[in-house]
Image (tube, rainbow, N blue to C red; front, top):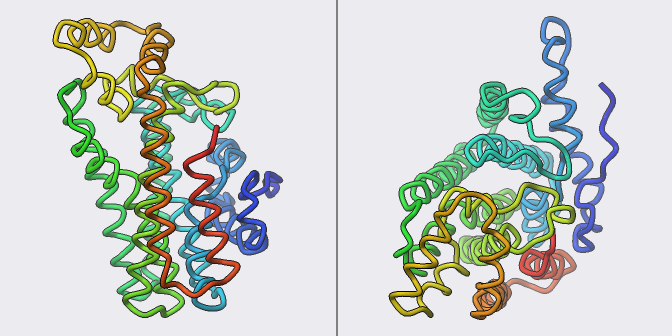
Length: 330
């Protein structure tokens, strides 16, 4: 198979300074999936997987956090590849759970080959991450393992709260902090650790990643509800189809009287086709605007978390990345 030509970090001006290391990370991922000999029969599964590389936000944050404190090393590249593979494994499993048929503008593995193959493909990626983790120093491997565990716990908590239209904003934030934001926080922590940053500065960039990750997930939920599928590049309204409360929905419900809430509950649990109607309600109640404002506030807090980190091009790139995460349209 030829190396895919799509550009890591495409669309992120803040990633221009790490274009070369991101390409090296891409190469490492490609090499870990290289199929040869008796495994050649599996090659068809990996072509679309490699072609579907996204913006590589998580490895990018490992690299930028590392650059804040020194020169990037082979370890930064290795860990960056691992977090992207871990992320892609979660996407493969998510698409099965959410019945998504498009991601990053191409058909999902579950739609191409069925749920069984998609789950096993995700498991294969995880097994490759486990193999690579054996070569890491113990503290780094521990952070990677803890990050993966938190993401899975957050996903489980979200499943527990399906159809819980009484979910509070605080509970929602706890869930997305685990399932999404903790991943970004872990990436920034790993980058700083690999550059031997002191404990205070490592904690600062980890907090930055966590807060930026909260903004990312709030925005992702907004795109799922009110985005343009042709632009976003993945199946939309999956949160609605799976009865997952999001920040905008939580805000809408708390602005309504009891009778109107019952009507909206019925709309939320109705068969497919209610996404547009709900989006109109969310817009009219100011719920979409509220969610965007909350995302912006978390970005502001993330930037403040970097206040004591020395000024550098890498720090500015992290700040620009956080702003992108809350303002993106895809």
